[in-house]
Amino acid sequence: MDPLHFSSAQIIESLFITFVAGAATGLGVLTTYFSKPGDKKFLSFFLGFSAGVMIFVSFFRMLDEVKDKLVGAFGEKTGNWYVILGFFIGVVFIVFFERWIHHYKEKKIKNFHEGTPVHLKYLGYFTALAISIHNFPEGIATFVAYLEDPQLGISIAIAVAIHNIPIGIAISVPVYYATQKRGKALLVAGLTGAVSPFAALLGYLFLMPYMNEITFAFMMAVVAGILVVVAIDELLPTARSYGDHHIAVYGMICGMFVMALAVMSY
Image (cartoon, rainbow, N blue to C red; front, side):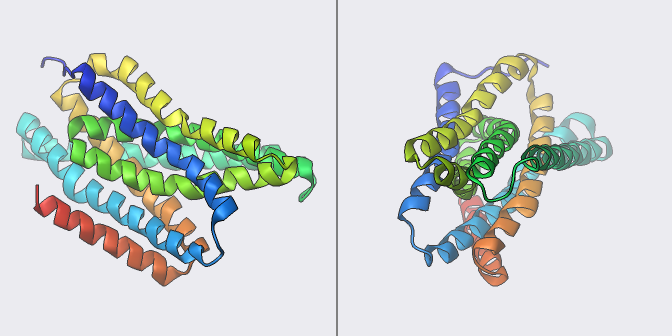
């Protein structure tokens, strides 16, 4: 099967959308300085909302399109098995990836006394490093989804952007309180967000020469698995920490409902 070809405009648009999603990390820094305590419930709702978007899009849009292509190429039984295989490759990859990141961060900061400026500074730095590594698959996911379908890619980019706001808070707060320099906190958070478009560019340079409709569809199944785990393992717990269980769930339901309406209008 012939490789897929995308125009320069498509590549630039995909990189831009990925950059915008990553840049939302910087909004977390602004939220730290200007938001009120009551705003946390608002953030909780929209974190749940983004989780609902990711889950619905993965199961009812991405995997549906992937199934059509793989079943059409390999037949009903084999095609369905390829869909399942791709999805769970994404699940297993991101689960072990996140466990390794968490273990690495905890191992590095345990040598510093908790609450001291040094501890806070390195907590922020190692959180930034861990999130930077984590942003690689998210950046590639957003980039690939936009190339497949711009409306789909924008939906995922919005969900990722909302997800990145509390990440910016987690990075910037300890750095700011340790150094008393807002510029440094913004710089660290900004560099972390820049990883997403960088990952997307690397993904394009290394993967796209080998992409055809079948490999692209299989990769979309992998991306769907990644997004579902990010939604369940990161977004929903974070949403609960900012508000309460019900606010997070209401946000998730609203996210699913909005995406259902959007899918019906395609």
